[in-house]
Image 1 (cartoon, rainbow, N blue to C red):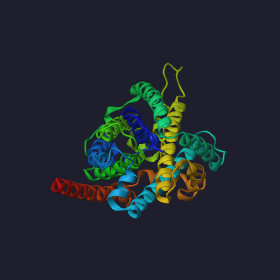
Image 2 (image 1 turned 90 degrees about the horizontal axis):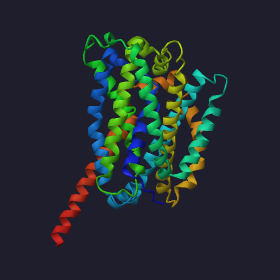
Image 3 (image 1 turned 90 degrees about the vertical axis):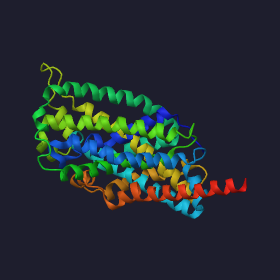
Image 4 (image 1 turned 60 degrees about the vertical axis):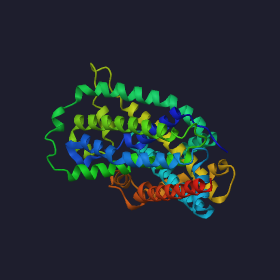
Length: 366
């Protein structure tokens, strides 16, 4: 079943996908007071891959990417690639589900078992995934306005707590921590957007992947850079690195005339909303990939088992709060690197080669 997603709605999904669980963790802490520089370098490093994802998707604009892979590589290789990215999307959904349950468990419902929290999130994502990407696109277009408004107001209130001296001295520890932090940020959350190209169908034009991925990437990356940099300047690089949820800690310091206080809830709401969208989108893409791999016409048949599978998966893959933090702030790992860089690069190179051969054969026949 094909779903049509307008370009601007697709871009809002990309933005919320990037904000996701990245808005709550202390990403790029290795860079210390050069955090902003690490974010800028990560954007530069991730941009060529974002362009590659868009190019890979735009090569076959009139059909879904899985069908295009079958035509280029044969059904067996196409189904294998579909299965691999289905597994990766489900893995991301489990990780984000665990992040949300840990956050809620830590700051609010400390006596509620984490599987119960993941259960409610999985059921909500199940309903959203059943509705499909079209509904998620319309919802994200509305949600993004609210999320950006809340972030903007919160950051403006936080400006009074900013200490610009925390950004100095520049490059005191050299380039190595900045480079490691930029690789960390490129891995999570920037290049996780690779899963999104597998859900785009019924595009309006060949340029649609660029119109979806590039604006969404830049808006999400810039917002995340501003939020993280302001957070670090408020609480300092040491607390930014040692705190599990530094933005939550920073917002707790807001006190306007001793009246407007305790605004941490805004951070929590924004975090849960963006993570819900990320889980639901990952679930749709996981179901579409698995349906193609198994030769099932309607992916919605697989939504319920995969959604319920997030509950045990979130407990098996990540077992503690420390492990969740280490996973979020690690330098890019081999599994992520394979799915985000190596495999897309191989697919793109071979696709360009085979399409050029087909074009030459067509010109020769004429």
